[in-house]
Image 1: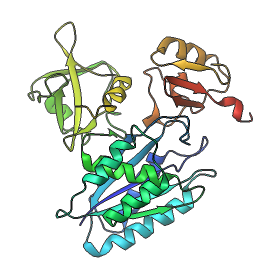
Image 2 (image 1 turned 90 degrees about the vertical axis):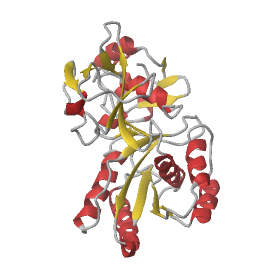
Image 3 (image 1 turned 135 degrees about the vertical axis):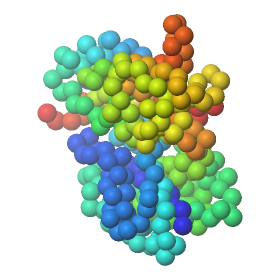
Image 4 (image 1 turned 60 degrees about the vertical axis):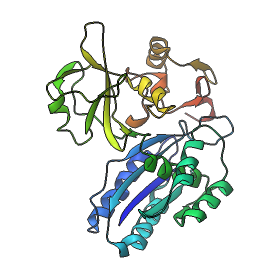
Length: 250
Length: 63
């Protein structure tokens, strides 16, 4: 069974981040003998005054493999962990989907896309969850986090949204690497020219000139690069990566 | 950045200068950083993203 798990709204200004909690849940799943699991993706949701969020409104999602009968255990483990570590004053939500290749997830993906540009309600989320028979649960506070948790699963399924958590932290800034070396990193499956959306050859050199991130594009972990004035491929700053995310990198 | 002040996006140097002189600056978790400069209002836990930039929310908390 392939499963998707997403959490949202677990933090406050003094707590560990939602991404770290997602990684802790992942570690527990693997410790139970399930997995492997993917890297965690950060999905930016709508920024609007009327939406309560800590400071940035993002949710954290990963997927993994587990036996068919492990779904209840995974949900229980994740729920218990959220109940234990979620910060005071937060409004955590958990979404877990057991992926069925015979099902259509268009509505779920649309929910995720809508959550990046409109205000959605808990009722909207519950209706969408019922239609797709997935697990959606509140874990304290107002439970508003179910909206982002559901949206995160939809966006991860969509495959064109999300920054890879922790990506490229071991790459040295202002160093030049061949694509072949970058692709040895678990968070880099492809290096694409941003304008052409074409993969670079393994011998192409890339200058890591800033704190960049890989992103989910065509369901792969992609490093977008572009040519500078010296005709050298360089990375994009995170601020530009995030702006691209408004349009799903397409 | 002074309490409740708003800063447009892409004012990187200004945000760094203000954060360096702010006694309440608190770095957010790495995945939420936006600026290249580690110490920057854009990377502070007390900033809240709003439609056109960020707003300093530190006045809401006791130091």
